[in-house]
Image 1: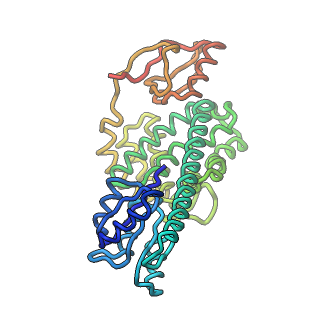
Image 2 (image 1 turned 90 degrees about the vertical axis):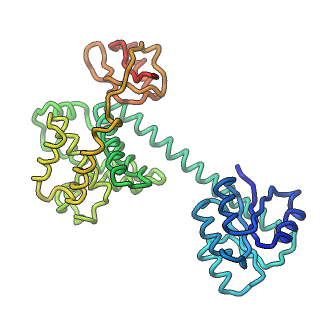
Image 3 (image 1 turned 120 degrees about the vertical axis):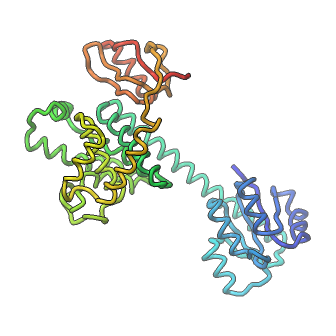
Length: 385
């Protein structure tokens, strides 16, 4: 974890004094302008603490700290200035998100005390973020592993929707798309709660009861509830909840949310999900999209138009092209390899879908099935070549 400190001041003698008085206790780097300071943040960061003088030419301290906060949001920012008016302090705290405001000249012992507090604050911030990220990643891996193990058909569908969502976002040059991709991948998580016989009846086109139909209709709600209590997945849960909502407000859930009030991720997912279903029935992509155009009130018209443009360009791209594969035995299968065909028991029961990336849970599941029922081998995975 970084404990470096960056001082930015246009007076070299002041920077030399900081180095002389503080170098025995802290790792200090310096810059004589805001522009040089931003360059150091980009090239040599992260810094635990960034300290800026207010009065600098070209870019003052507040302007510099605003830019620094954008480039390194975790760094704790301090302001040093000889101009100790109230307005300067307000601007520094409100605009530059400054942790502490100090008058200049600041006694070395007082400055050292402030730096110690700022470093502790940085450690708290980064430790909390690391904990949240590990919790989030662990929760996501566990959920996808459970889905892959309990309902491989739904897991495979979720992976396809994630790939479609990634292509769609790329076609629109969208950034920060992890929530959209994750919502697509986990849109199927509610299926783990549905009795397998009900899902099998649905897939085979057999009649289902009103009670069974109600259970299937509530899958988005179930999925949303599973996701809602995981840190940082509140927005993902809302996308999953409204994934089957029609643009005119009809459909599930039966509330007043309609049109642009429906999360944009849900509106995209609604289209991509129906597209995948029509393709699975044998329709070509272009024909499927044409059929969807006739469904009045179901889709956001602008999103549907964007889907036409996206799939004309991206679904023929290498992302979905065939990949070379090799045949291996179960003993040779390793975590991280990607399956290129379904894995089934000797009597034809699907265990894991093609395009699944092998996890520890997947590997253990295959080994257990092989011991009890036997699985068809060889197994086909993406080639390393």
